Image (cartoon, rainbow, N blue to C red):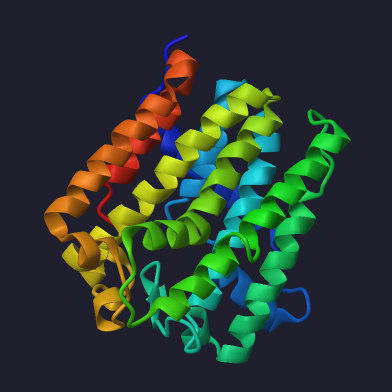
Length: 297
């Protein structure tokens, strides 16, 4: 069977996830209507859906059922969206633009934004806990634990705490790497591994994907730092130059532009190498790696 090109595959998965997210979210006619409107505002019609793409790409290696991958992809994406809503709050990064439109607290208000994040996090685990016919119950319980850990104090939330504490400080490169492995990398790793678990990956295959996800998580952040300094607000869909204005430590401030680009190239190569044991079955993960390093927003 002839395989479709990457762009066609990417759009297909993004459309699947948009439809699945729409079905997951409470309708705007359901009370409290304003909260549900805000939840849909921040979740739908925006974002690259990188985490769902990773989930599907990893699951494809093991011929995982698409509907099950949709379910776990939605759970991860909803966690990601909740984190963006909270990150944008005045008490955090105080940003007014996200995905090319006003942030939640600007469009609605701060109290609503807090509740949106809370409700989305709860919804993510409700979605992830729905029975998966193709996955043993004990495996699904372990997957829920994986997602919870990735989102918590030893993952995304902990990384954000370190990020806030580091503003105005000078970090060593190993400290910056640790922060981003938690803040960005853990959820990217979870997305990849959840796709693999849906497909029944064995322990060795999971470890190979952990190595891949470790590299791709850092690669995503290095590219993010580069784009924050080099791209425009219009292209990014969020405020450009925000890190420098906030005096945050980044790969650009620690390494300079030339070395940051070199690091991105190195991480890209290491991610590709981690996929070699999977052969041609990992073609979508290879393509996603190239997409992440070449993205403009």
